[in-house]
Length: 259
Image (cartoon, rainbow, N blue to C red):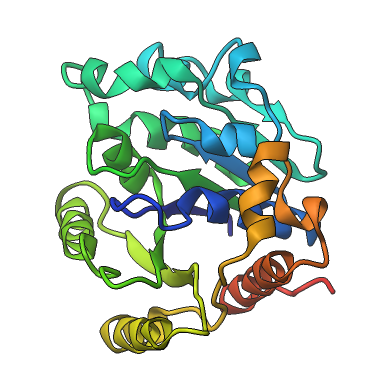
């Protein structure tokens, strides 16, 4: 069955977009049909996959505000099996424009429902906030993947996100569950990283992925070249770890892994 996964954390700098781009690319490279939806007004997922935001004629903004068909805004990427619902600067005003719109929380869900069966996975890169764009993301999603940086304030803000998830489950999307928690930017040379990993595992228990994404210079460089890490530097530790994460996700989903 196709699965829609929101990649979400209201705290910025957790590796959310890095995960959205590289996990999507890794799964598509394994032969799965994947759609990446950029719901962050910054549009970093769009540029990170190699699409020029300034040259986009229509975007996810048109789907949310103008009620355009999502199939009209989808564009292919340079990578087999991976499509993109892009974002540009227009999305910046969508948060305000949605306030007075009828069924404002379900606009994205209704759009994705028309094409969902065409994909194995749909990943939604959400903004680092808990506004209407993120709410649309959570209503449209089957599950949520939470990236958490291995730093001192790792759990700061997570309580607010979990509360929002509960509210969405109560009123708008009763089936929403946590897909998994991904530890990112780990530096195993420090005691702090190991302490944070222990704390997160105690809090989220079996929901924490075994794969941990380390700090990696090549991962930081790849977006500026508009390439996922497995293309920019396939031998880097970042590429290896996101491939491992993709395989772990497939196994948890009960999907045969192509090696």
